[in-house]
Length: 407
Image 1 (cartoon, one colour):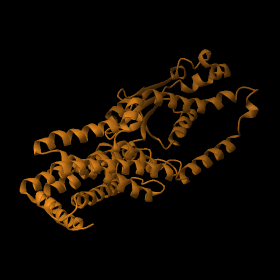
Image 2 (cartoon, helix red, strand yellow):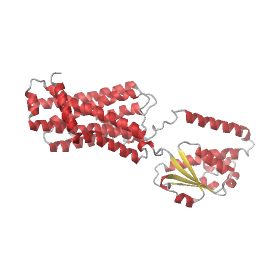
Image 3 (cartoon, rainbow, N blue to C red):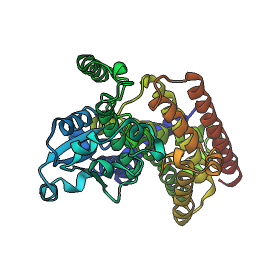
Image 4 (tube, rainbow, N blue to C red):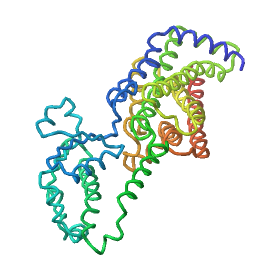
């Protein structure tokens, strides 16, 4: 388009020389990503997986059955099982604050299990185990601040139940024939865990962490739309210097002027988003999904919506104070409504519906479709990209109309 490329080259040079803009567009988002990594223990992938629960076990029984309980718990990849001699040893460990739960196996554990019968095991609320693990001299303390405390209790007791059930059933002539032989049970368990270890799809190293699936895309989308303030200030600076008026009087179509003013920020937005996802990969070992190629159209369309919104804001505001008031408020409000700050899955249904009025929400949904599913629904991704392009068209048209009316 006549004149648009010359304007783009000129503004690109100005953008590169603007140190404040580079800090806001590139360095500040990287700093946020690094802070997220350190806060979740995943910075440079040197810390333990935050999805792993650390369980301390005090074995006061020291029997074959208690050792079997410990071995079975250690087989779960979501648990990190540590054994201690007593509670004092647990309190003295440097990693006490990272312990999710303490399981104490009392000295009467084996004796209490020997007293159980099948009515206790299968009686439900009327069975001997209905009152909890204390019946078999087990004590389970979960860290009070852990949101999943009750689930961990049920899980651990369920695993213990699964361990002691064959011991009780073996004493019952009716159930004994249906129990597997020890060799068969061992072989089946080893095969199951071998399959778990060799199947990447069982639990990808990074897919379970909410940082990867929600926070990185969320903060990325939020920072992409932060550039609307920089765009608006760029327009105000040129308006004050008179260069914008001279461009308007030049034999260049208004659309060409706006395209030329928008393209530098569009390219900067693409670089910014790509850099953030690359940082997520390097700092978090972040998965880009089964087909990373679909990230490209989402990034391109998200940047188009963001820069078009920036153009519209730039055409409507007249002072730097208005940029600070309207631009920053717009970014924070849209980011909060859409789910940039917290996962969209946590939003109430009404908020999810309202968020669809923002380009942020459609971008987050598109990123979610690419990053968090076993296979990418290409039709869904393309549909979301078309919606983002629709937002971009409306924003650009609003900016073009205002630019012709005022400037």
